[in-house]
Amino acid sequence: MVTFEKVKKNEALKLTDHGFSSVKTKNEYELLRMKGPVTVVLFNSNKLLLQGAEDKVAQARDLLLKLKIGKLVQKEKLQFKQESGTIIGSDEALKGDTFGGLVVAAVIADSIERQKLKELGVADSKQLNDKEISIIAEQLKKIVKYHVISLAPDKYNKLRQKYNMTGLLNLLHMECASKLKIDSNTKHIVDQFPGCKTGDVIETKAESKYIEVAAASILARAEGIKQIDGLSRKLKIEVPMGSTHVKEALNHLKRKRLPFELFVKLDFKNVQQVLKQS
Image 1: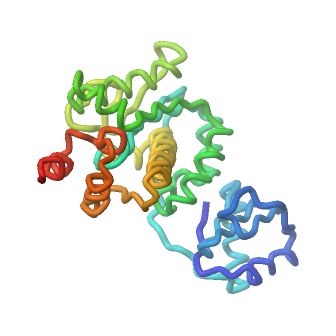
Image 2 (image 1 turned 45 degrees about the vertical axis):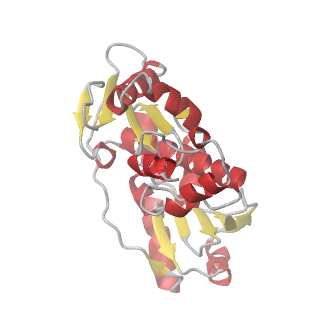
Image 3 (image 1 turned 90 degrees about the vertical axis):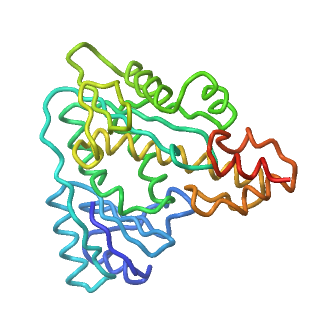
């Protein structure tokens, strides 16, 4: 996948003179979608994605540069390890977020599916914003088998009474992989977290080394975004992700006398500080 930014719709439409045709957009975030040698998606953010076979994407990239359409986003290309056989990758989301619960996702892929993931642009996932991640996640689900466990805040808080964070993560990663594992030859790769004891291969930054873990990271992040969006709708405020800029949102919960356990992680220190305030 190749990304261009600052692309206007009328500029993108120049591609109709070069073997591309407009097709129906798939959601409200897409401004334009075109089919041709590759798939072209122009988002409301004026970011344009090229998806398809690597050689065809390279040709389309060169065409856009020749036509002076937008600006090519230069990024470091991830070089995934060349693996054989069937592999499961798993990763988590919302672990460090005050709001929301916890999400763990796993993806299983063979050599054919790995190539499809590469063509989808999974390698470039960190260049995508939240809306685009959600769209790529839906496309990814059509390519591979996957399993996602999404703990809402209340479920997370109940389980944290029984497990510490490390134990809970080990449990969820193992459960996700067990839902997909075909046989004893299926290798499970985990993005390392402190105290990780599950998986056949445990590596730091595994999402940049193994495409299955990168794909799992996208699914986990997409589900985490859904959780936060759902909480925002319930609270009628924009719930922040992370834990840096959450004080106002926490104070909103307290002012409204809302049950904290339905929205945030009760074991977080910043949550405890707000709860203890008179």
